[in-house]
Image 1 (cartoon, one colour):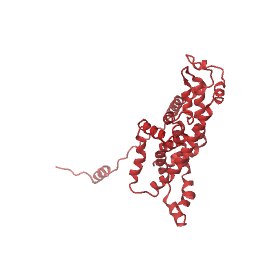
Image 2: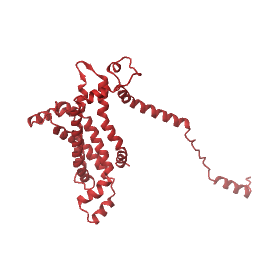
Image 3: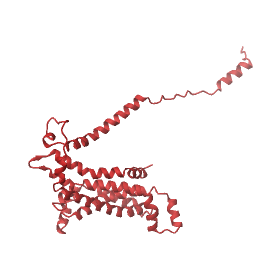
Length: 300
């Protein structure tokens, strides 16, 4: 014989079955100071490992040749400026002047060509824009050693060997694809409403470029110019094979320290410091514009 449960008990049972389950929320403990200290220490160690060769080069430039070639290396020495005096009193001036002319001339040409091209490929896109962009960047896939012989023959036939103008043209062609891609990413960040407002106000294409677009992408232009300066200043292969005495650049002068008498480490280190100083100073003075430019063209 079945005995029915009291009404109060059945009601309590149904109410208990329908009660929602309470989920336990577990919170992760905050990162402790120990983990943060380990990460900071690791970052400093990596930074010092990358900076150690540069620091050793600077220290070696203040040594005498005997101290620079000692084995094991000497960490305690009497500093001297003899190596810098020897370089400044030697024939290094024309080499550095050629590097300045080739770098400044090619960078200016790259910007004059890359800015309109990037504008056409971003704000006023042409047909098959992606194909044009791929064609530009595909020129960087060709090894320089594969084209040096045709370039050498052509330059010899038109009497352009050992000419600084040849380096300017080649450096422009070398940096132009990268500059177009960089400047295009900066132009894509410009709001379309700004261009529409300029068009409503009756601004021409030249006026829009000069008064609206150029000021807005100025950090990007500074970043692109600095990248081109670094690549052109450090270029070695074209300068080695296409120049002799009249158009040789600073990297060629660095190679001249390796003579048949041996390698002069202190003199090479001093010349390397002087050769890298212009690029370091340019990056130091343009660091704010460089950071703004690179973050402006970043992919969101």
